[in-house]
Image 1 (cartoon, rainbow, N blue to C red):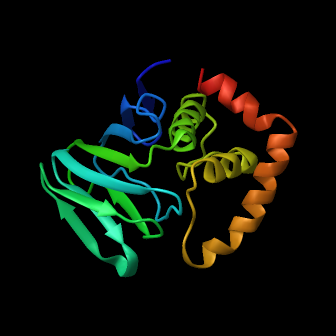
Image 2 (cartoon, rainbow, N blue to C red):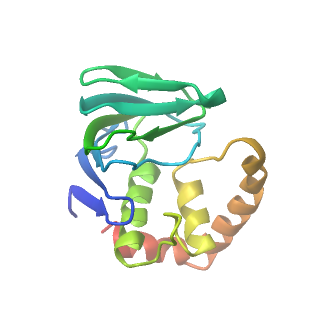
Length: 180
């Protein structure tokens, strides 16, 4: 299994520096490169924290109430459990940053592999998310990635869809295709 994965749609590369398995669950340590304009949607997690550290270029974090944190190389910010956030590149050049997930989260790691694989296989829409709602639900639940605000009303539905996908073997198919 490759330590570096690429999402051609989001123009993002993720290198697994240390995995949850390698650290007995202590940390999932990632190095992420994103192109100008790249980033992810606002979300939060209930089971782990994320420490973001800029390596090259300026990393932007958007928090609750549209608060922006700008990290220059060497600067870090700890996103606590339940804290709404997203990362993005507001500059004109590619940036690189470290993302440490505490405790390590194999579901988070597998989700990144699945999402990058789906994108590479042309299974993303023009908004940069999986075309298939079942795939989206499986990844959202597997990674404990929850949407804030009104979108939080979708969580019970996503949990239901993900549970059904697990029973039908769809989750296992995704794991076997993209995580082995």
